[in-house]
Length: 257
Image (cartoon, rainbow, N blue to C red):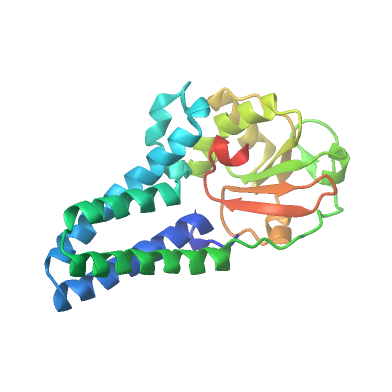
């Protein structure tokens, strides 16, 4: 999945597609406001937050069992998690409620349709992941002898590239540690990028985290191998070690599951 990189920050492909759709929608709505009816301007500025809130709530409803123990996580929108169809459906219902005039309904629904097409095109461009075999080289481990990814056995691997200076990495790490401890169907490998063993140990101690399988990739070999340009990045490898999916940016427990 492609991403937009701004310095050390990375915008995941799904969020990039959503941003493209919103920009296209507001642009079309601005044109229609000037040429068709000025009421379309106020409508467009209102329907966007309504759609975003509805998309988030739709995601929460679909995965309520994981939100129930931590209900405040509903507001953690930076980790992703939106049901696009739910947002679009609520935006459409709101539009039909606001506009009773057939002409305005046609123009407003056309703007929503345009945004959906823009999202779909952007998503198709960023959704593909190239199948890449795991590197054969071995890497230094925080505890224990050097290991290659193949040494973790014939199970799928969740490979997390992170750094202690990266705020999204620090936010997702406790959740990732819990998932690693509770999932027996995959091996979680945490590859620190460019930091020393002392720095990594100090961070884990300060965050009160106990994590196995920590790789010290001080030469950024894994990031270069997989073409990762920012952190965090979570890669999903199948049992043969082949990359099947890649998530840029902070990740939610629902996405991992």
